[in-house]
Image 1 (cartoon, chains in turn orange, purple):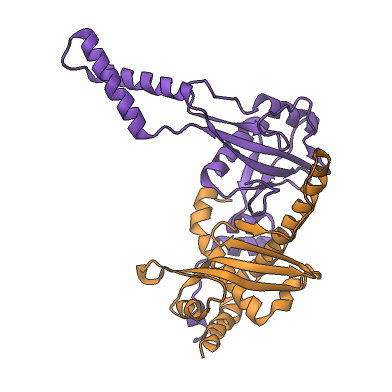
Image 2: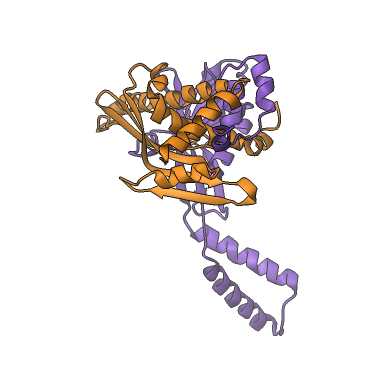
Length: 177
Length: 208
């Protein structure tokens, strides 16, 4: 195991490729995300996507945000070699809905809005409220982790470049037509 | 910051190792020993320690319960005093002027000025109340996982330092590489491939 701080910087591209793959998977094969969580009814791109293009030493950041914002610009950035560094996601399970931001380099979850939970009106409510909120947070954590591990198995496989990477490239091209 | 607030941030950790001896007694004792120390009316600028999830401003780990189902739930508290530079400068200049008047001299040495500045800061810190920040955490002991409800760099770094000091266990932040290494259950050859990975170019791959 290499030094953790070295590993964070050296392999942060894995997180960016994961988010780009996740967007591709949401668009082309959303059912594959439900394999480990059959109750998951949908995963959608939310109201923010941040991309970064570091090719040819051109550090360019493209940020697309706002409800109803078109993703054409983001797809164009992908075509130029950018990758997704942060993404806002909407996860649905039956009537329940979660919204959160996922950062590629850290896999940190922020701005997580879980489905409404019961109000804490007295000290005796706290234990139940903690367990309910923890369960709701873990639903998101597990979905993200399972998706990441699915991605990783593909990423370390010998067929990555000729298989999945090529499919992502074709998806980018077909999305711009 | 708080687990129960409407919008939360989460950083995942793997807890490396297990506690020697009875877990809950050892954790309770460590929490008591490293409980946040109040610094109001004290000259300290910062205090970092554990606090209770239910009573973050009045922690009492000796008698309070910190276990909910199979989880240990408590909080990191960071108290900080921040004095605006302009106030420090104003007080420093006044103190220098007073010292010059008292001694009848025209200038002070560098050491004397440093001494006066320390004295000014000491007096200001005593008078200034600390701003508390509370960050909740959930420690799932059996699977060796910890969820820290903040992504803030300083808070995460303070957590890692205090956790190691308190429990003699290391926290490993679960970012892409460490998640792949510790969580995904990759085989030996897959882990070898992981260390050799380099960046892919998707669009070009689609045109090979």
